[in-house]
Amino acid sequence: MNEETETTADVHNVVIVGSGVAGLSAAVYAARADLEPLVLEGPEPGGQLTLTTDVENYLGFSKGIGGMELIQNGKDQATRFGAEFTHGTVENATLEEPPFELERSNGDVLQTRALIVASGASARWVGAENEDELMGYGLSTCATCDGAFHRGDDVLVIGGGDSAMEEALFLAKFADSVTVVHRREELRASEIMADRARDNEDIEFRWNTELKAIHGSQEEGVTGATLVSHPDGYPAEKTETSVDRETVDVGGVFYAIGHTPNTEFLEETAVERDENGYLHTRADDAGRATTETMVEGVFAAGDVADPHYQQAITAAGTGSMAALDAEASLETLERTEETALEVAP
Image (cartoon, rainbow, N blue to C red; front, side, top):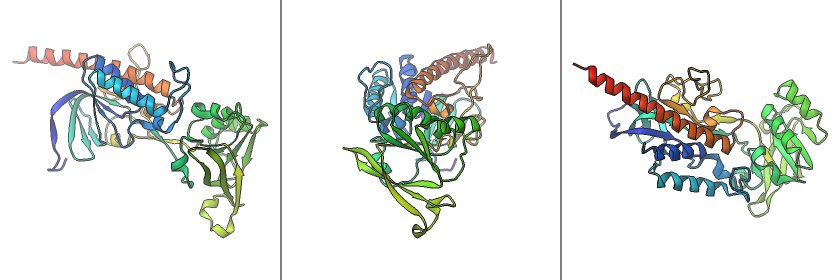
């Protein structure tokens, strides 16, 4: 820490990094346990769910609910029970022992006895024209979330790995046609996933092709896309005059080029991450899964530890689990501190 860094006087019981559905669920449970959690909302308050216009597969909303509305409801609920929210991003963490220290982007340092990491995983975007405007309006990063809205549509899936094959296979249940757009001539997907996609008669492939632009509006949704192709692949890297350009009519575009977990601030800590940055969690003495990371008192919730499901409902579930695990951890810590005081000379 530099000399300008200011450490806040209060030591929080629980700090929750992230304000998506996992962080909000953790905040509700922690607040109801009178732990007075502090939630750091991060650079994208509400997380990926705020990019979804309609959520139809979240339990309890038979007619669906807007992603932003669901997030705001969760924030209101957590606030009602005593959770505190503040804007801020964690740049570095010191986690040797509690109280842990979290250095924010403004230089201030927060102290907390327990930490719940619910900072999520950000979907990778292509960089196509109009993607900012149309994300959530026919452009999506989650077929499981939005595929049912595209019954009878022709749709594109951008990518060539296992995620792209899974998205294409799921979308084939609803769409009239699914076209996988891949910038090379061979897939990165595992052989079994590639074979399943190739064997599906509703899935086609556009090789050596990339997405250049998406057409449509927030009122109409996605109406088309511009594709560029080159026989040697990676057409976006070629000169404009050397690529073939084509505009196709489609009703939806799905990005499936992976996610990046937002765990950079844990790089210098003992919290274990896999090769892609997702957090590892440990099992309890009976071999059952928990949300605790390899650092006692630090917990993971939502997509930050889940490269597979990445659903709002599963994130909410692990958020509640993390809060319950944190509550138990704090009780153990309190007993340990009381014992240490009793035996002190």
